[in-house]
Length: 235
Image 1: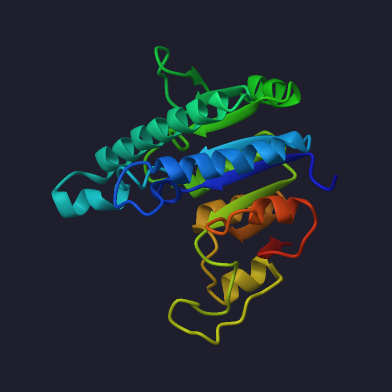
Image 2 (image 1 turned 180 degrees about the vertical axis):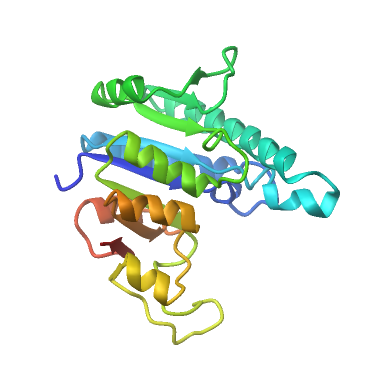
């Protein structure tokens, strides 16, 4: 197996499915089933979830809330998603642990690198919530940080497009899809893969990023089985 341990970044919007808000039962079950198929392959799985299906920190300014408070609200949204995903996966028969970057002893345990790795080695899925625990950092940055901390072999970035293109494929039907691209190319060509903090963390720590379209069911499984899907970003 090429990858022993992965970190999957799953956006909150992905859990909305076709809904305008919240969690779609169909969407969350679909992702849970695919995650379990990967788990059956013997791959250790860490997951970072976003919270955009409930609240995005960027909304704060438009409704008169400070950036710091808005980001804290976004962290809480990720905890709701983590608990929901945990529940759905466990109902399908796989043990899950949720760790959060903030202290919430009545709800979930605090993040610990050592405990997280032990859980993964015991073949439990670990979901990381509340971002980095700090305002001004996105869940992309949290995904990069957790990937480094748990010593993941690769960070899988779930998107709604087929990978990294030379221009926006939603605006340019002739946009070119890259099979592989370097970090330096992404910076010079201004290719939007992840936010700059997340990107820099991955570059400096030599963590490869696979950008995949997870709206197409089975893509994650196909990629991990060795099919050429999406784009690999590397040094």
